[in-house]
Image 1: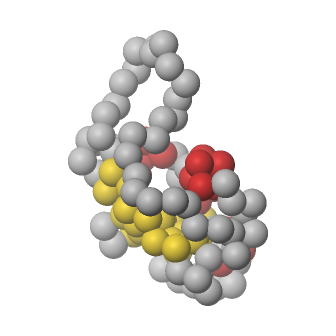
Image 2: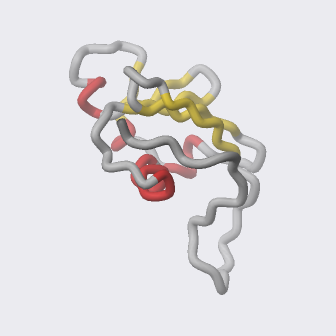
Length: 100
């Protein structure tokens, strides 16, 4: 999901990031390797495990220096093929902030 957000925002994956869902924190493996006990490496979980049902929300924090914070919400789960490119961005406000 991090790479999808990077593409949508036009960013270049130059900074650390983390996702928070309820009390669980999933982070860039570079943070996990620095012995933060409460972080789980994002590469060890599946999206369907952390977004199990519609209405699930998460906070995505990117670039801890600038602190770009995004709220994500799962609005639909579909196993049927769609005649559209997925994933899709369904809403947002204002212009995208620059990478740095």
